[in-house]
Length: 193
Image (cartoon, rainbow, N blue to C red; front, top):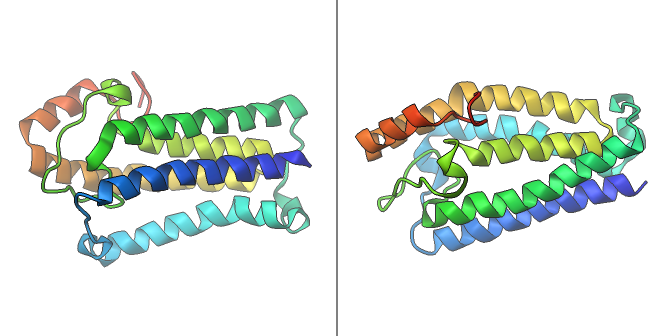
């Protein structure tokens, strides 16, 4: 069963790359999460816990999650691993382009700048796209439909709540340049969503 270990490697790799960029961005300025308020902190916890726990539970003890498995052919599971590896590189690309603007919150830093390079040339929220693809790849690699359903539900919550709050904050901070940025780029997938 190499797929569970490969899925874990992909997950840890993406977390490592993300942590590296977040740590570098905090060297200049940090936004305490408590400034977001209780509702956003609770929403983050409610989304993150099921999103992370399902694939990690499968990796830790596959028999306990056997009820959520689907019979995926080997080539499809390898495609899930490949997608995950591509996402690790894309996380580096996304967060590298954000640079010091990287934040764990929906709030903006005092020195926040509008980024229009790299993946931001095509979409407004490539980090969310990367997250969606990461958990899709992991779910496919594990052959775990529960992970994929949780990911879809999480993205629906992110789309309807967090992204809207984040965009309102960016509009207040960056003004008309961000409004033009919004008008010329889709949220998650170029030319579609």
